Image (cartoon, rainbow, N blue to C red; front, side, top):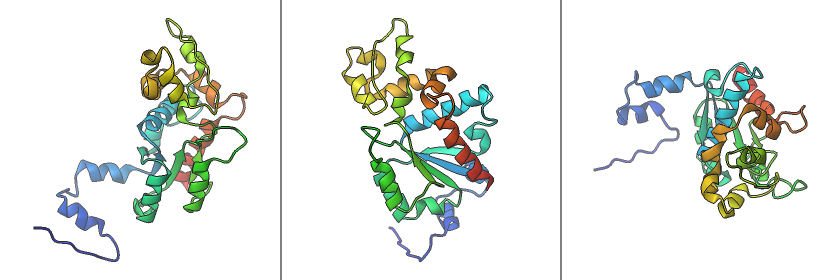
Length: 220
């Protein structure tokens, strides 16, 4: 037997009580400690950005990882999923500062990011959303990483290529991980290789730009 109740606003406390979550549960304690959310597309993005923060801290470019900063890196899907999160007011109901980061999905430099256009239409702006400068998170695995493996894998791709597709169709697809190339290899990227991808000109570091926006968001 089910009872359906409809209210003008959601009472989180009632939901918590009906789910049997005690007020002293670790789940609630963990949520209370969270200072903000870094919302990304999928698990691969969580792996990548978390690894970047660890490496950048180890090399003295930032003082805290996302975890130490109190920021929860959470996969919520692409623009279609975010549209639902927005329409249902889920993101705002989290009651915490947030920053959304999606793949640009650009296929060439001189084009607008379709994902950024969608985010703008949903009402988000530079203060709470952005997209990667390159096509996708896999684009930040520098080809030199594969050339330095033993034995090396010769592979070429640019900033706007579909890296997952290229890896899936490569003769060494098994070692590359195919479409799972990020999950297989991103955690093995050294700081110099990350800098080569995120800061190719040696001055403007894309990861640091993202990190500082999230850091400032939590300090506001």
